[in-house]
Image 1 (spheres, one colour):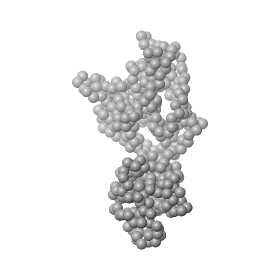
Image 2: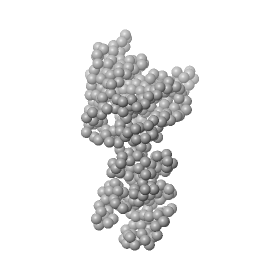
Image 3: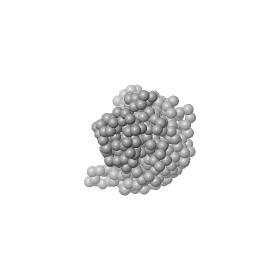
Image 4: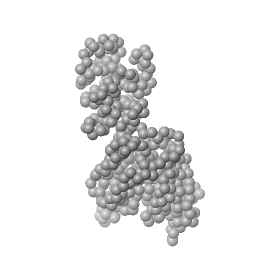
Length: 398
């Protein structure tokens, strides 16, 4: 792996802060963050709250699987109730666009941030081999090492560990994948601890787990009892393309709008056509696009996806207008100062896509702004029937 950036902190984080880093070329990157957090008893005899630390990447939060509002207890966070001031490492694997990105550190109480390392891993045949050689600090049954795969698939994971027998005790390791603890029935009552030092005799052991996870957010957690060593990990992404797909938090285009998901292309259209309009106008624009699906608005068109609708030639000026299209290509670029508008437009795109907001356009399939004379529009579109005006936009059905 090629080290891009390294920062050693070893500092108490009592207030949130941002850590900026630059990406020279679009691709897959690995961010390794180590920190520690104290339990309530370690803070004081009468304390009722422990240290916690969570991470955001470009404004994106990472929650406990199945519990979308629990951020401080998630696999990608640092919880003093679990760590008891022992070091934990979280490794994020994420596709980044070229340019500036930000890690946000959000504390509760006073956790300690140890270090940040950013790497560009080598991908060989859809696989990444990570030489780690990380030994756990001595402790009892606690969170130790975690991988967070962001918008990535995973076909299988191979792991090599070393566990030792110790006086009156031994090293053990538990593995949890997307919230599910993997069992080893050979271990009897300790089956939830997949690797037991009693069976290692100080030697290394390798195991492979076929998981076949589709593209999304996935967590692989390792819990340690005593001091096992994680020697190496191999992540096999399979045949799936590792090309970056734009997301709401990293929407910079790939150079081709056809790479966008349907929600993403809908959000771009709303942002470009109605980013400066009131909420109902934005919703109406979204619905006017949705209303074209499955309809031949013109005899020679057949719209099956939002991408078909939005990217049809000569349909949405925002994608070809040189005054607007650069903003659609990179909505979060600071020069536009429209971060809030972008996130609001994406939220509306999700609501329209999932039909969780009513069609305020009343069935519209066309719209234009007030700068275009209505007679001119109707002359060019004789089948259009005027419905209503919302803010600066006029909407039409057929």
